[in-house]
Image 1 (tube, rainbow, N blue to C red):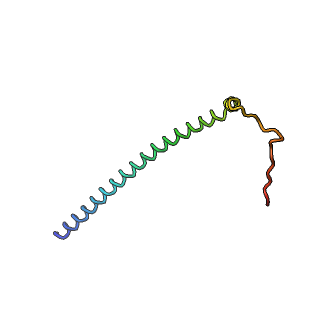
Image 2 (image 1 turned 90 degrees about the vertical axis):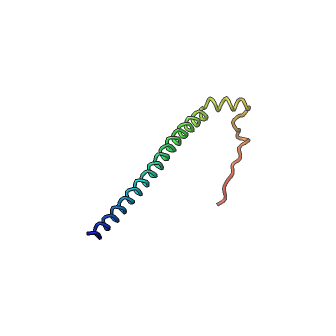
Image 3 (image 1 turned 30 degrees about the vertical axis):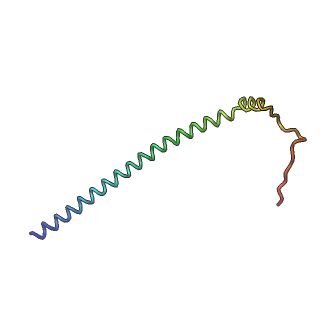
Length: 87
């Protein structure tokens, strides 16, 4: 009977250690998941801001105003040079 009690004590101790280890791993995975979700939200916000900036900068009126401010004009046929790639 004494050997059985010792065996059961060892098994319970191993089981308790396993439970604590699994709970700790679960907690660490949850923390990593939470950080990843926060990073995802931040990246989504950055992407939306960049798309808005891209749409604003691609506005034809804005481009036209900037070109006039810098006195830019479209290239003429005389200013255009054709470059051919050798095969």
